[in-house]
Image 1: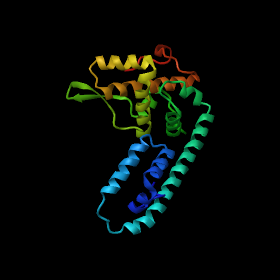
Image 2 (image 1 turned 180 degrees about the horizontal axis):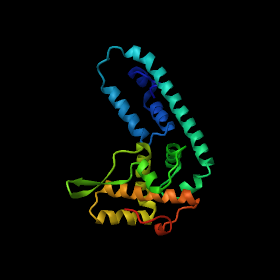
Image 3 (image 1 turned 60 degrees about the vertical axis):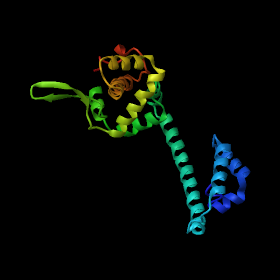
Length: 221
């Protein structure tokens, strides 16, 4: 829109029908309503802002640069997706519900070149290991460490959240944690911790996801 008609005068000249067609061709769902709102706003405008003509020269160039950047981003994303799908661990990782190309890409990128002798060490690296909060000689509960790889932690959290809709085993584990008094985020983080241990076992044995956790890993907290 800005690349084609950068100023109010340009938009008025284009008219509602062309604005509607432009919005529709670019995937705007409520294109007719937006086109009407734009023309209504133009009809109500009585003041011309200083610098409008200059903005009309600059804005189309900026808009085209932004369009080009989006195209480059999509191209890079497609190349990354192809690389991830060609990785030998891709079928293993994505067999787990909630793990798609993006999560697999983050997991592979953030663990590349690192070795983890145990699943617990991988969970610790991701910042998903529960830490006991103590006060003197008393235990005041557990919290998830703020340390660790934040990108991997976020990816595993979002993956765990997504799995609640598609994986009954994940949903059941989440509900158990909620029944134990954990808040939503705490329960999802606990699930993410459990799932990263499962991923470790899957990678180690080159096995696909098994919803029966007892066959894949020791009991997780």
